[in-house]
Amino acid sequence: MENWESYVRKVVPYVPGEQPQESNQIKLNTNENPYPPAPGVVKALQEFQTDRLRLYPEPTCKVLVDAIAEYYHLKPEQVFVGVGSDDVLAMIFLTFFNAKTPIVFPDITYSFYDVWADMLRIPYEVKPLNAQFQICKEDYYGENGGVIFPNPNAPTGILMELSEIEDILEHNRDVIVVVDEAYIDFGGTSALPLIERYDNLLVVQTFSKSRSMAGMRIGYAMGNPKLIRYINDVKYSFNSYTMNQTALALGVEAIRDQAYFEETRQKVIATREWTKGELKKLGFSFGDSMSNFIFATHEKVPAKELFEALKREHIFVRYFASQERISNYLRISIGTQEEMETLIRFLTSYLQQEKA
Image (cartoon, rainbow, N blue to C red; front, side, top):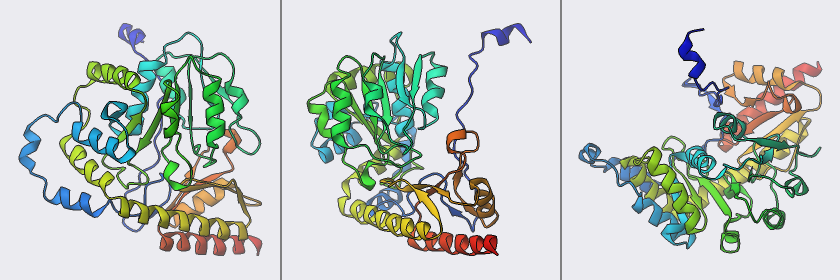
């Protein structure tokens, strides 16, 4: 080994979901919204003045911060905007998780939590989900350096009730608690109202799922102004211009169109509930997902076999081969009604052949 390699910060990298580029695919593997962005987003993009691209974007992201604050009835100083919720969460890790005691999060959750902790040399402990893949609130009562968990959780889709989240907050008054709500618009109640009572709470959301903007990379955190100031201090020390001109302009239009947001949100929910019923008929079992995906296992056919069979048909779902506890599950994103009907038709045919 060359001498310089001894100084390299070596990490085991996070592996993002596969992004196939086939023209005839049904892509149900990375939880994107199957419907296009709001009409106002399309119009703003068509009318965007490209001459603006020669200028740096406004570093405070004021237009988007103000739009988000207005939507949620917050003050602008309670909102932080970043390049997708991943970027926002990474800034939170950098800013707040600096204690010698370990931070805590579930054993089955986003795999980038432990990647960031390892990369930033943050001690951590994982708390096992119970047999029903639920977070056990009592596991988060002890001394720790911070708490983070998604709600609904991913990849399980299981929702934690607001009263349980508040109980965790009551037992963690002296550390930062982060509730990662990427999927909350598909069936849960946000923890956002709790930020007025708990000054150590940060609620993180994204435009990638319910607002159909995964390709634009917009995420945001909401909390008390002191927390937001601390995150901004780290952001400005790292990269003052995190959001580009187009993201700011299009993000404003996405959050303004409440009617379109509600229409597409309800479509996804309706299709999810229909798909649950059809999967049950085929012998699948799963928790009661409140997200835009279903985390399912079949009573007889291994997940790996189904994953490979679907892939041959250009239907892409997510398979977690390296995680033993969930290696027989598939995470199936909710597509359009037509796409999910195609999925069910194929699974019906394939499983009938397996019986023969």
